[in-house]
Image 1 (cartoon, rainbow, N blue to C red):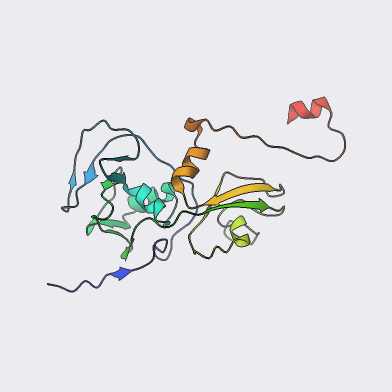
Image 2: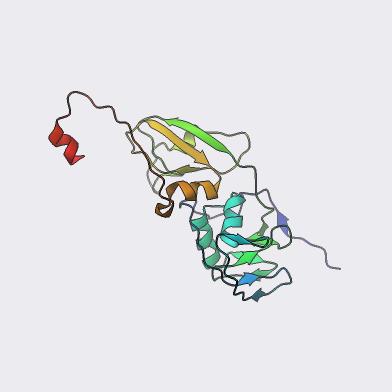
Length: 207
């Protein structure tokens, strides 16, 4: 029996060259799934949501494992960097069985979901609410302020302007982030602003 020489790594370490930008996304259609036997098969069930009968969408599995956001995980799949049971996959959606199917990104095995972390950060001004700044820029981001002992990859949920101070949620829970930010869930957001001087009615209408 050939010896398995594949690289194993902790979740959240998919390999070099990954862009960590993006925000979680999901879908509702029931489409092809990948059988743990080795090949893709087609299903016609009408189940809703991201999982059915123990199956989960591949991009959700990657997001829950801390690899990347759901949206960027979809990009990794379309770029052909993801293998399931040794088979390179390109098209979405793909369903897998966690604990049975072997998932790899750039040759690195993704072990599975990691511990979920939730951080409420009091964002100071002059700080970007993003994972990293644009190429060539070196402005401080919210992730520069957090060094969680678990080492999980965190993402900000929503945004506050560069000069705005206030609470920002950081998490690796892609499902929660998607439910809080996607318009279809209708989560209302209330902002309390403090201004200098007197704000006339005309100015309020412009805001």
